[in-house]
Image (cartoon, rainbow, N blue to C red; front, side, top):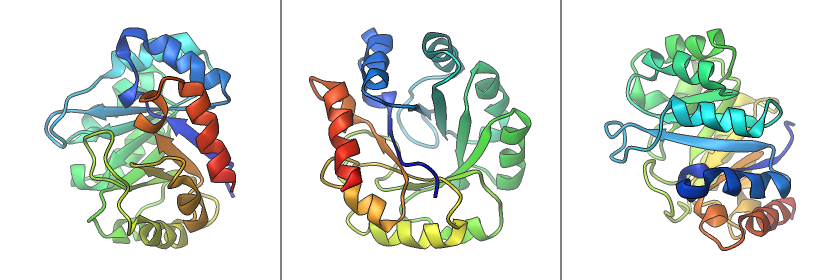
Length: 217
């Protein structure tokens, strides 16, 4: 089984002191920093682009995993820019392109892990048709931080784990906190993306450690 990780999402960080916020969670033990990219089309908000990924890569150095989650339309047009900026893994949405296989291949051509995400209401059958290096199960509707965890998500996580097998990292993203981490892990998740539950607190490092402890049971 892939190593278990809590991946803090900078979507909820204070961008006026992004480097300091990232340093806090890395000091607390984070090895993966999750970067949510939104384009104002696939989801209503607009967030960041490759320039922030590049700045983060320069800031954290080569040993921290920058996991980029593209919530954008036609991601195949942009994966090369994010790969060049320093992404380690790039996850696209099955709903965002008619060319899922082409987009995943483009990610790998950029030297990154190729991930596939699905929204809560999207059937998991797409995972039967493609090979992925990582899988992401949205446990809220994509686009906004701070949403509550969808209660039926653990069942979908179990079904996705069965589809991708034991060796593919399975991420969950949305509503992850000390209250929901254990249920996600029990269902088969091994990478837990946490945004507001970490960076929406006064002490992101301590909040990160609390979620790690909750995930460990």
